[in-house]
Amino acid sequence: MGVPVSACARACFAGRWQDGLAVERLRGRNIRMTIQEDPGRAAYADERHQQILLKLRTEHRVDSTQLAGELGVTRETIRMDLIQLERHGQLKRIHGGAIPVDTASFEPAVSTRTEYSAEKGRIVRAALDHLPDHGSVLIDAGSTTEKLAEIFPGDRELSVYTNTLPIALALVSRPLVTVYLIGGRLRSRTLADVDDWALRSLSEVNVDLAFLGTNGITAERGMTTPDPSEALVKRAMLTAARRRILLADHSKVGVVSTAQHATIADIDLLITDTGLNSADKTALESAGLRIECV
Picture 1 (cartoon, rainbow, N blue to C red):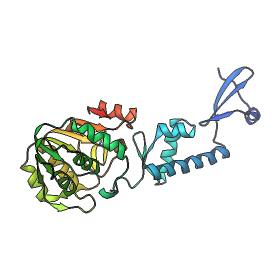
Picture 2: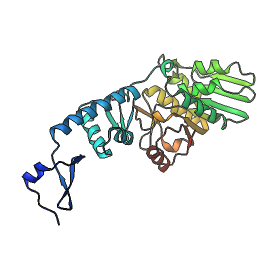
Picture 3: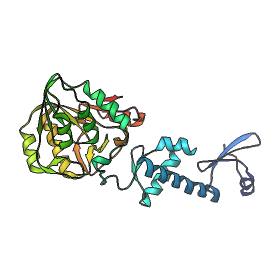
């Protein structure tokens, strides 16, 4: 049975505020009541919003659980903060957190993609374990796949197809590797060949294995990328390969971009780094994706 609390008694409480609730002890009984947020807490909410936006600008993604721990509030409070910030057009909510509002359409130039270099190094070294001793391989354009080309072995008889000049140049000196550069319109931002010429070339190719990249991956929307023309080429790569391995660091998980290029069912394996949080990992595995964290 609840204990009635007068307005006077409510005003006299000197208790601990916790997510819009006051928990007090009155005459030996615990009283839990809902209250309106006071001006002091409203100011603290503004400070939280500033910290969230600052973290978003520097890290390009925020995680709700991590924010709750850092700011000393519950995930529900963070959820309400993110809802409010999204309503003001300051961020875009995603599963488990938020990303900048321009992430869906923004595409960094390949030459500027230097984040998570150590993680990408571990990912591509793990990818080598899946490389056949002979046969054919397709390597997608991207910063992670380019790192794979840099450490590609030269002692295996492999035919390698790629739609980007940097990867072709990295591989051409390998003595036993035959390199095929897929032509097309060269995108200056990503150095990827796209459009009809690339699509026609890929339609005539059948490879044993494809190493693919992406700008975003979620259980609900699959793999996405900002440019529709690159999405079409990536889809053609899926069709050309008997086995498909996605190479993506943890920052790509939870991100939804403009154009979908694959579903979860299209990918045989995701190789990512140990920065992947447990909630995202569980969601992807529940959707049927096999994951290797390194």
